[in-house]
Length: 320
Ligand code: GLU
Image 1 (spheres, rainbow, N blue to C red):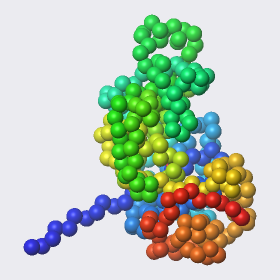
Image 2 (image 1 turned 45 degrees about the vertical axis):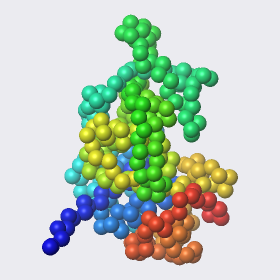
Image 3 (image 1 turned 120 degrees about the vertical axis):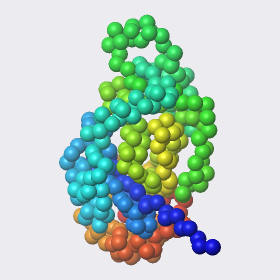
Image 4 (image 1 turned 60 degrees about the vertical axis):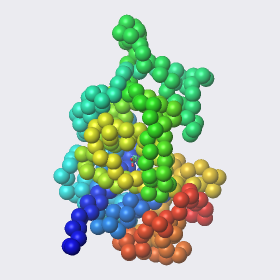
């Protein structure tokens, strides 16, 4: 009997940076792994600029970021400066799409205005999640029309929050293994739109990954905790679930994760100290793909890349 081979779907991955400053080593590490994963599977790489927060993000940072990626040898097939079958690729241009998605979520779950200030949210009695952030206690969930009118008359502009079901969402991360989160107990009602009208990251990322046909998400482990609510939003929006790989974080010697505050490890400083081949080699050595001291291009790593070689633990950065 002849076997009927079903062709595997083309991998579509993405890099989705927020241009709120110069990229740092942690961003580039994640970009390299996302790129290698796609290229080693002959996939399509998409670049999306996550500049939702127009107060913090700037077009010149986005330009710089793309220049830094090209300098390193990380290219993309779709996105700014490349093919654009699923534009826009700047989240700041997508408000109408997010509005439509919000309406669709509101058709599948209960979306309600939330008038809580930061101080309300951080009240001493507020329950906390495992990672120390505040779990929304549901203060505005059952306000009646009169209470809402009073708050609005007092000048409070509401954010929009969605009620989550009391349900376990389970998925298997390609690196972290099986994960489960109870939405009501461990996530809580979350924001879909901020009080200043900016759509929330969770809604935007799910909408964009869906419309761009992304079936593989590689990103930092700091976003692992967001994944169950994104999977639930995908269900509300009738979107398929991508495969997830949450990469280990790079940490400073004192154990903190690297951030844009570490100026000596931002791309400006790194470009002045290393050639693209040196920097790529150092990142690849951190990932355990090549021996320390190797110099190479990202393209030269495609054949040695394998998710099984990537460690599970966060990576300490010393002597950089
Ligand atoms: N824009 C997010 C960041 O720069 C990443 C979002 C994602 O990969 O899902 O942290």
